[in-house]
Length: 309
Image (spheres, rainbow, N blue to C red):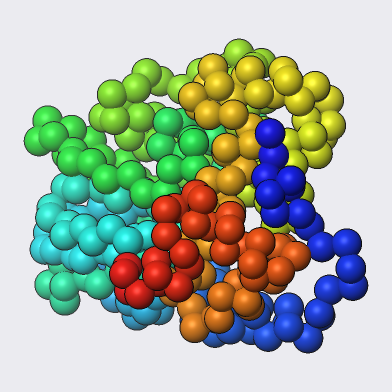
């Protein structure tokens, strides 16, 4: 079942002034960071030598509008990501998804690489679904963290050095960069205990990945699984069976989890009132939002904010 019965979408004319105020508050407190904010004139891809600096914007709380991979080979760093605090040491890798709330503080003596790319950059050479077949980009997982064993460290440093060289010409060799990026993601998948990603994933698995991507795009306006089933040209009952088989959750539960995730982000990282958050997330009234949040989290929004802040 979807959550529309519990939290119906507004059928009356929305308060657009309130909506604008909510969005302004969210954008002020959680700025969206683009790749060209990190490296001027970069377009959908950049690889930075951390020793060269230039990462001040990432020290404040933000939402990156891109995928990222951070590898230190000397020094330390501190990462905050969705309530998690990670202390990074040499040859530990952190991989982040777009729009995950985080901040990054790198010690001045540290050296390493920060790789940033968008989905559209990767999909120009590979089918867009391939990116989401990597285990660390599935199931709404936010951050992936792992250690590179000593026997693999030289390989990673070499691949990233080659990528820097491909990026240096006046016109970067983008197809080569995409190929190296794919290799790095494959290597990360292996170190995570998975197999090399196959481009011919079973149709039912692709359907679930497509569903999760659609939920990410439309969960504010569409909270009923029937909308997504129609978009995917399958029945709602079949969508539920696929989700249970692949994610151990119903389609409605996946939508609820996505809404709850965004609600928690806004509660913890913006000054918005409970009412503003309710309208930002498409709820008809604050009371509907309070009921939904308390049922999903076990605490009222205000209590959750005070406890977790």
